[in-house]
Image (cartoon, one colour):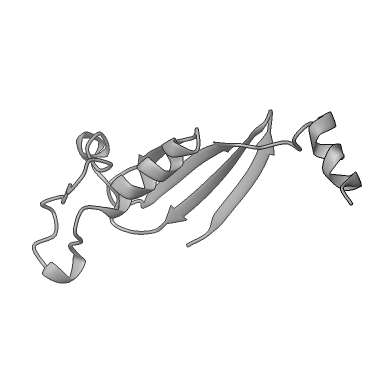
Length: 102
């Protein structure tokens, strides 16, 4: 699975592409829902618990980001998420006072 990343405008974007069976457009709206299992896989080996993408979305959103998918049947999927980039914390006089404690 190739992945790429970039950072611009205070946001980092990570992309992960796969060459799987793809996701129908109507299914792309629900795959991030809790316990979502697409009915396309009758083989239990290919079915999950329906929590992976839900948990991924919750984690990304908890850190102020967003996640999305772009996919076409038979052509694989591209999952992307963005997160804000944290800059250095500004130094305050209180931060410096601890340097001089004896």
